[in-house]
Length: 304
Image (cartoon, rainbow, N blue to C red; front, side, top):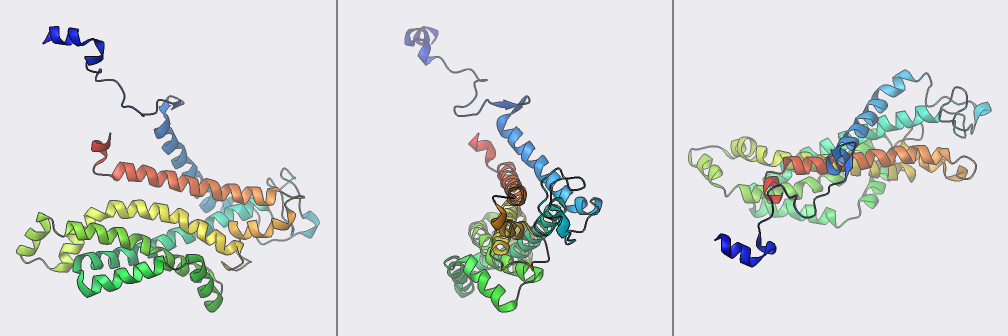
């Protein structure tokens, strides 16, 4: 055996067990592997944004709607206004923090409502199949073929502009992103032996769905929900930018970007600051969602 290995040359020798797989990144940030450092930084950034949005408006002694024309378009660093003021003399820092609270509220509420509707209907469609499943999935396909932004504009133009209407609209446009994966997973899981065993001992359909199928799809639903929060925040910002989101008296990042368009040359900080806050929030949520997907994937060991 040893003579044959020697004859084959060094190329036939097995690779050391400690050799990292091909393609694995070796870049390190502060001594931490790059991929883990990226997840850590994104988590810290998201935590800082949430903390600032929740606690910040309580600590800053300004009303986001308070106007002072004498202080209009003051640059960042102005005494008493760290990030400057807008065209109506309102403090930009306070409005960015207040807008973050509104964006996170809309994102979390909309994603929660969409998850409830999408998971329930997706599980029913996958478990029952037949006419009920075909009807539900046909409705899902029809909504996926319809432009979401047009649907939102129709609802907002018909029902009016309010925070509750916006949250309902984003939930209505996002539930299909939960329903389709849940349908596919339940369709596969219901043929497994543990479901057959539960049905053979007389377990009801509701009990099977709640105690046997739902725990298996929960991890996937959490990952989808995290990514949907980021999508909904972008969606709400787009509506506010078009003037079809929350009322103008409520500060939002999209509304601030819309108001700052005419002052891009004389006051660029009015668009840079809310745009940067939106970018960091959505990017951090996307990275955290990617980390959850890798962490909660039951087959991740097979992919390494």
